Length: 391
Image (cartoon, rainbow, N blue to C red):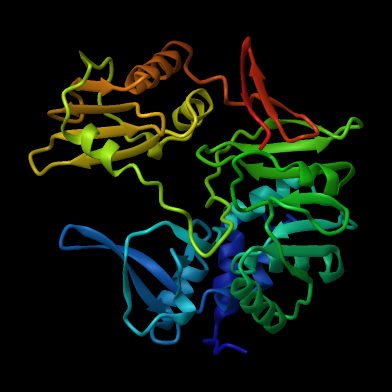
């Protein structure tokens, strides 16, 4: 068993109090699950000489920081960056900024997903594993025999198995790609990784009337849907957003090679040069605008910069060769927008922002969801509709 500082129970109890009401069925699991066991070492994002990097933190070397991070209900503790797992890193290691590839999801969000799943005492659940903490909560709530946990990464699963055992749990664990065939039949499928489209295998693995809770990659959309008699599912977009790492199928995410397009977006004069309707925004920091844009023009990548003099620039590129650059002198100034390629990406963004200004929200908020048996996902609300095709 990993070394444990004394008094972790008090930290867990305070976290439970800050996350749910005392009468909640999740209060006990939160208060009695040793989250620190699942994150003995982790990565923290810091800025060094103007560049963002990840620095290793070691719980045994700094117990106060360990307890503070492990029992923060609003913190996802990053355990793997690119191919670099904190367990294997040298002391005081630093790695360049990259996409995180595993974490212990913030407890508040894990519990919210489980609450949307509406677990009965006899529910058979399939969950994604990662660090194993969310699996431990499900075991504490339902019992080990009703929990199946899967992960594409064999090391993550082996580490989680050991740490789950140290916490007193032995659920069924399998190395699986969550988007592929799934073992058994389940009343609930709860995914703490985002998927590009709902896998058809989930609908096959769901028991009649079963429920799935998941997010779509590139969006903040949390989907809650129940299996229907035709083998599909119906449900809604939950009122709160959620943002998870994308599913991966190997050691790391493949890096898109759009270097030439990014260079064009940074320097080129646009085929269209206009003044934007609204100040520059960081699209990645939103959920409703970002989600609506992803459903409208899937696959846009975003970057943003702020110069020392306060100038703000946002860039957008798309695999079809479209690009946009919007530059403004300050946070409240209207930008000069350069655009090129087959589509006008910034115009699409401004159209969505106009929609938001006029209506006060976007139709994706609270939208109804219908999922076909092949996984195609259809959204609709107030005359608006969008579809994420099956893959």
